[in-house]
Structures are given as structure tokens and as C-alpha cells.
Length: 293
Image (cartoon, rainbow, N blue to C red; front, side, top):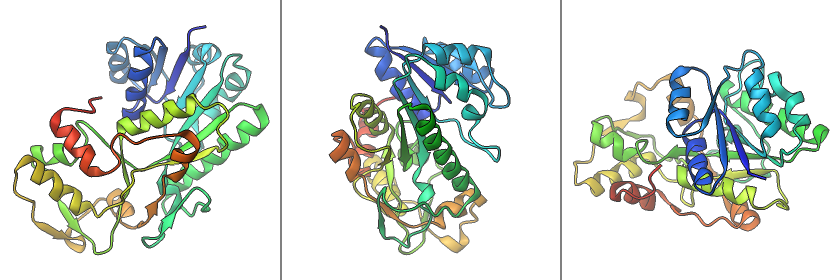
């Protein structure tokens, strides 16, 4: 039987995973909320379905019934997870669906004042966006228990990669070095997200249902920009004190959370070996043209 990957929300990470699996002979179907997104999916040679999360889709229901693997990256809202709200029955009844991967965020942990956290830490989300993610995680966990479907939750750090990095920001003249003493962020290269998902798919006996997908070295954001500038032989942008940065509400919410997030479980349980364990390897790979998406 041909393996069939269905991605509900064909975003940056799902596209990279899809390219990997399609090259191995998998069939790929992706959903998008509008015609532009559908056009991008079809341009890659995959099947495209329109799904905006407001109502069930006949085409999506059909795709679910033939899917062997499902990746969900569509964001939840106040009404909960859109896929479960519209298609829980289809997913539960899907005869060949062997694995569901739900892409969440390490934002569910909230602020830990720079301390280390792992998957055993209880979520303490501090933003409405992260509270919605916790609710969606809970809904998928409940669904797994009730349906006996295999569901794994992947809490992603800040995603970067080709065309989405400090390298690109510097080239475009938009990079800023915002200085907030003690602030630390994890990040993760998009290729390592795809590698982790592939590892999970290939480990049907994995012990855990929740995994942090982060790099090895949480670091101050200004250090990342300075390293990228050095790689490009460009001047380091001037320091901007946090209180003068005029961040958006979303930006303020990111800087309001400070933690180091452990990735030990993906290594011990899934056997993941990060291709880009720190921002240094990741940014150098982008400059060299490696790790393309």
C-alpha cells in the first residue's frame, strides 16, 4: 500500500516533511485556506484541498479516509481545534490511519525565568494563543484515548531555515538586536523538525506522546544576529534596549517568556540526531546553501 501523508495546514514545516516523503514515493495531500495556498501545494506536485476550519469539507473527509499519516499544523482558535471540530468522526473511522502528529509550541510552558524545562513540566501558558494550544493538545490527547488512534504532540521552538532566518533579515536590512538582559530563546531548524517527524513515524513503539523539538543551545537573540552578521561580513546592527524596541503585542508576548527547553527525549526515545544542533550550524548551512527547503 502506498503511504499517504495528509497535512492539514501546509505550512513551512509540513512542506519540508512532505518533500522528504514524496521523494521516497509517498503520496502527499495538503490543505490550505485559500486559492494562493492551494496553488503552492499543486505547484509542488501534490494534491490540494480547501479547508478554512469553519465547516467540514467533503474533499478533506475523502482524503482522511485514505490517509496513512496525518500532520496537523492548523492553528486552533477560541472554538478549539478546527480539524477535530469538523472531522473527528472521519479521523476516528479512517481505516488505514496509523499515526497523527500534532504540531504545537513550547509556548505552552509559559515563563520559567530562564530555568530548564522538559516534557514533564505542567503547561503554564501566559498568552491566549498558548492557552488555545494547550486546549488543542488536550483535545487531541482525549481523542487518542477515545479512538485508539496513535497521536503524538510535538512542541516546536522558534522555527528558522532558508528564507526565514537572521541571515535573510540581515540581507533585507530588517534585522534588529533587541537587548533584554538574561533573555534566552530556543530555536529549531526546519529540517530538524522534518527529521524528528520522520523518526517518530518510523518508531511505532515510541514510549511517549509529547516531544519538545528544540536545539541544543538556547541563546540570547542578539547573539544569533551578531553571528549571522559575521557570516555575511556585514556590520552588526546596533543594540536596541528592550524598553525602546516598540514591539508588537505578539513580540512582547515572546519576550515575556524566558526558558531553556530540553530536547533530550527526542534523542533518547526517537533516536534523533540533529543536523543543526545550534544556531551556528544552522545559519552557516543557510549561507552555504545547505539545508534547503
